Image (tube, rainbow, N blue to C red; front, side):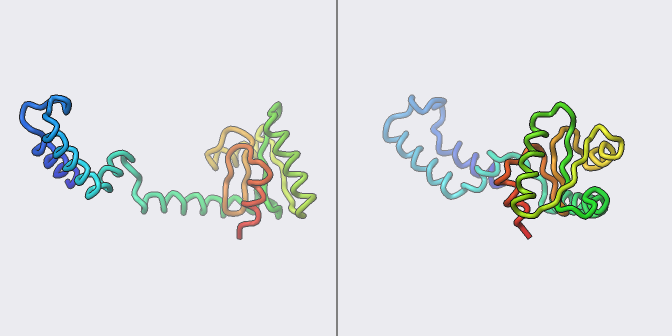
Length: 162
């Protein structure tokens, strides 16, 4: 509603018949620009909202997060099988091979354990489907899913987080 009010106020400032700012006399144009600037500064939040477009409600996002965490809680014991994380890979996937190599190095350096699941197997494919994931590689941690290949430095950060 405030956006309509701001737009209406700006239209009132624009002189009748002036469809182009270059047609305005310099003094009138300066006054218009001053009013426009003041309206933008006073109502920046309205402009930011208009530019951002529709955003999901915080409660809706919270529900998505809770649903994902509930799913992870249900799947993690079986998928992780006591390991720190699970890596899902597929055959003939260069990123998967790189992810496996980096994860092996991390596990040696930091004493982490991981389990690898090939999404070509029926069980891994079923887990991936329940998680809504199709393309390998992706990682599953007890409270997080990481889609795509993650460089070792990124994995270190996520694994170090409590």
